[in-house]
Image (cartoon, rainbow, N blue to C red; front, side, top):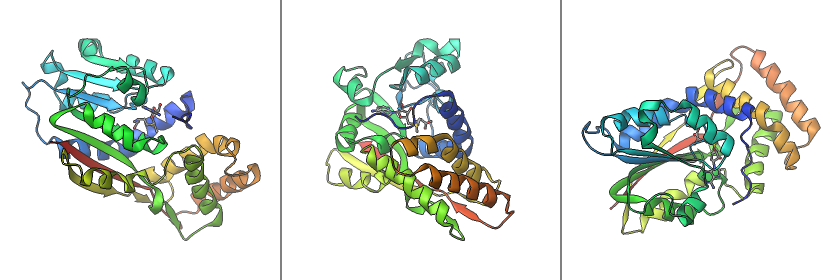
Length: 281
Ligand SMILES: C[S@@+](CC[C@H](N)C(=O)[O-])C[C@H]1O[C@@H](n2cnc3c(N)ncnc32)[C@H](O)[C@@H]1O
């Protein structure tokens, strides 16, 4: 795997927290689409893969009633030690024994058998596969962790809808840099457009649903601030990987500030966040 481009510094953790406020409800809706009702007495074994700082874990603990059945398990797999420490910090003591924090990449965890094969009811994986250059193999490994009837809930991007209207050259330059940075690191800004096809001809899996979410907003809206904070946090990285130069970046910052002040003039469309639910038959 190439190095993960966004890192795990405090600034990125703060950005992830804000991101959860903007996108969290979409993730909860995707999990609820896969598991509308969970029997409070049932034993659930679930996982969040590439869990970051664990922002979806509290929801998963509640939704799958992890506390109510002491045999239930929640795996939080996250390769970054700094991020895994944040996960430890947010897990409440009453459920600690049931949360298994696996500080490994998805690929290493599979190699090391850190999650038992065929053991999971639900795997949630959000904004991880776009950074991978082994997506097809990753998906096979993820499915191998599912029980028969278990479900893989993927949320990932198709960046095509990321636009502002009226268009602005500095904005378009930055969105190109965002996509180029991913591609340069062997990731894929359009990864979600390729996943359902990989499962379609597989007799052991069924593509249960594909839903696309795009948020849109004027200046000062949550989605506007979300995109601004992403560029602010990572423009230095984009310069370092050589997909935009310093002067173009400065120009974007200047233009974004101006656009943010022009009340009601510009309408931002987010990248598509695609929910893909795969059932293991
Ligand atoms: C954009 S963050 C998303 C974090 C979390 N899923 C969320 O939605 O808040 C991407 C995460 O993927 C993790 N990651 C990167 N490469 C990975 C790999 N090969 N296996 C598992 N996780 C990986 C990163 O460490 C990071 O925490």
